[in-house]
Image (cartoon, rainbow, N blue to C red):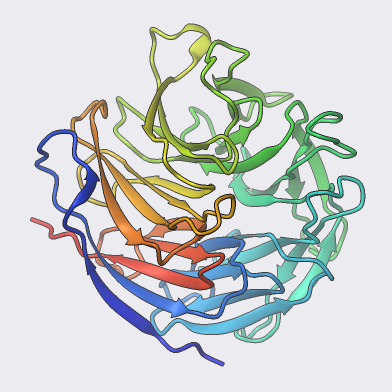
Length: 401
């Protein structure tokens, strides 16, 4: 059944805190609820699923992997009940250049079972992509949690898997998480080989893929209990760059749950995190030659979130420098408000910030993505709400010169 489209205008007037007067345009987003009956909304991906040159929304919900067709946002089920346990993540990207996304999904979610939980699937598309897709089960490590497609040094694509815990891990101790790259075969039904990129960290919660390496192939950013790390392709083992770690000289760091890197200015790239895992802090990092060991400069923007669980780093206001949008779901504080906030840098070096409320208690954010959904040249937001059980688009209506 196609959910009824619910829409509401939301003009943003007052920020939660204003540090200095800013010449930045006032944020303005039009809220559209495209589904008000989701179950949990574990993961959101944005890609053109049907090849019509419009970006669609793919959702990993509790028992179904579904996609919503742009622009009418009609809901189509790709797969249901992949396992008896919950789905937990989804990745979507055009791998073969035909304009249509390939999709993978993680399921079998049970973070307390570090031996036998988890499942990983490649979903093979039918000719009519509105019909059910064929799930092809892949080998997996326990506690599959986040996956992404990544361009390789050879120009192809791998599926990157980052479980929550290492195999047999207890209370964050034991084997490290195996960050694996799955190599798709020509026949997707054949066994997929893998390469282990790293196995040193425990409790890795999220990752980002960024096309900013100096050579061919994309790079990774991984948020974990031990730190925030960069992984870049190299001859032999992947190179590891420590960007934030209490052990390496950032004593205020106590672990990270979410990480996103934006385009930013070439002179001042930026990375945004939520710390610690399911935490209260919104943090930005920037390269700083004065810091030891290559660590990035750490700036806390907010310390009032309750169970922060979604973050993006992008220029939604057209400032020429990135802003940060963060969402929280308040699972750890029942009865607390939920929502989304926008953090805007007031100077080119991103040293002073102001905060705006985007969604006031209508979005218990489980996941958050950014993309230009309506083709007007600016970036819109997509968020899935856990306890609010909704999937919303926030259309960007900031006036442009």
